[in-house]
Image (tube, rainbow, N blue to C red; front, side, top):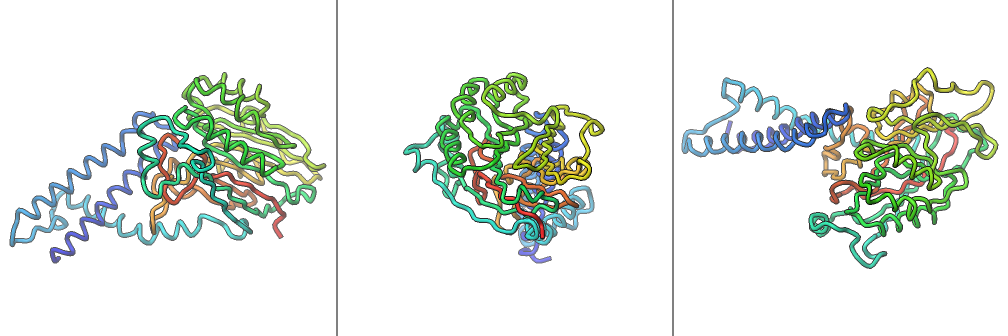
Length: 389
């Protein structure tokens, strides 16, 4: 190996090391591992990786005119380098292929995006902490924008009466106080201006008690003639989620995470189902109603994490809405999404998917703990339903 090839190999191995440990953290998060473990494993792996590659580079440089090739080391270090280099090299093939599968174009018939500059609209930066203000100042950071994504979805078993039904899908509001209430007031105005038939919120709504008044001042203003429905997410259980449920219900929002709801929309039978697992228990699979015999029916499932896709198929959902993954928040050129808290890694980080007769829409979310987004703007999704031809 020439010196240049060794340096290239080390760079690819460093990439593989990073991808490996982010993948581990993604899956630990998906299996609801202890929060401190999930929060520390990637930083620790990062420190270990930097130390390893610095030591290897130092030894390489110390050899002078006798090139040191770390890939020929016959111990655990050499084996690990080869594993990481293999992962890093394969990622340039596997990751772009995965990104190409993110939007099922047989289901997603049309998609337009209208970007709104929140800072310009409000006349000031709606952030409280110095950290968030510094992040917002970074070039190309899209955290303080809102993208209104209009998507036309073909649903395999859509009742004729629901042709053209519109659903606004919101997820991951993360009301912590860091993003000021005026941001959410603006969000609500944008949603109501779309005049959807239904509004669905798929978890991680509020995680600081100081923000409870915002439910009534902001979220209670959401308007949809067929209802505003929600489930809770993992961040909602960081505070008193029973109080959260009570406040949201008093604000006029309808919870579907504890038990299914059967109703009629425009004369068509509709069953709303919810799953807040693995963080909160829900109804047992055997207790959920089966599809109605002899009648067309829309079965709409609200979940927080797309890891519930298997459950969605078990309950025979026609359309399942999920969030949780924030679209990765940072989408890299070529590699796409890397960080995604899911047992499937980045596979369902955002997008439109079909599994059998179940269509899954995963939102990029509205906000987050860290106000940093590149190539992944916050999303208000307006879904227009049509029958799959």
